[in-house]
Image (cartoon, rainbow, N blue to C red; front, side, top):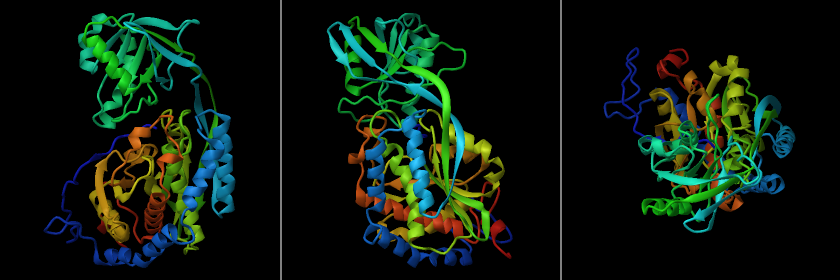
Length: 485
């Protein structure tokens, strides 16, 4: 998946004084209108019921078990494949059987196919290199692929400094992992930069802090009209090995064979499943994850667990027979996220007239681990409301709300519209160890942890859908939205 890495920060304190109302008190703590604080706290028993039912009650394990059956049946679900579309049909039927209103929005999506690929070090010694081609990479020419000398660079500045050495060679980007947001640029932009300087192929050190000789795939981007070269990721171990050889002055020769091809775009669908609201049915709280995956691994961690978190948030609320909320709760399973947020961009255009009515967009696309609370992106007033909601999760020790930049992947398309964005916050996660690898499987997930995350997401979704006020957007204050103020 594409991730805008989470950059945690403390919110900037700004005090709004509207008709005598301040969102922060003198200690710079959130201060909501008393009626709103009381309203949110009135959901305490409801939240405790959700936690009990999902973790030890009749719904415990349902989320995990349903996902495991799905993953075991369909496995990975790359954009453009029949397998993805059959999995969407399956989920649509199941969602309808749970009493949700289901619709499928058509989306034309890319169809990139990996096919056979290999890399072999020929000199200064012989060694097979473990690679995974990058999405949108072209294949190598001819039957023998590309055999060329390798030049190793640690960053883009070094690439520019050594630009005269690049032509006719394979460039290896050997950037060490810092954060995903900082390091992923070498995968997404590096091959195009190398191609522009005359490189015949590009290798990229996998974007991960840890490896047991596992390459991590992902997309790379070539500008329209610019040269395109075969591109693949290599393991941390092989990247370090080649860098050591290069530093010692060895002439490194590698043969690269890739039969990747970009086929014509094909039809897919975004899946929408609505728990329709009663008083404001056109107003929505979106809860989401992406249903496609890479063609390696099983697509359980990325992002089957997120897609099914969205679905089961509504399934659980139906199971509990909760009162119909004011606003519609919409589960969206995005298609073709991995190849560039294709489904989300299509949704933005198709549902443009509805954007003004979206109270919040929730997404889970960072695996699953012990819940600590929520990450939030939006204005201070909305943050304070979400923080008050999270205070109800004290039984799970999940009351932290961080105001950050970069919430979600698909829901990031809503940011220019000022829609508040929310995602799970985890105590810790080994997500990046398995991200975009053959190791993405049900083994990376924990049933009890998933049940706790389900309680947090389902409760948050319902409370937001039923509050007397929507979450404020930029330029609004809580006071602006207070009924009968």
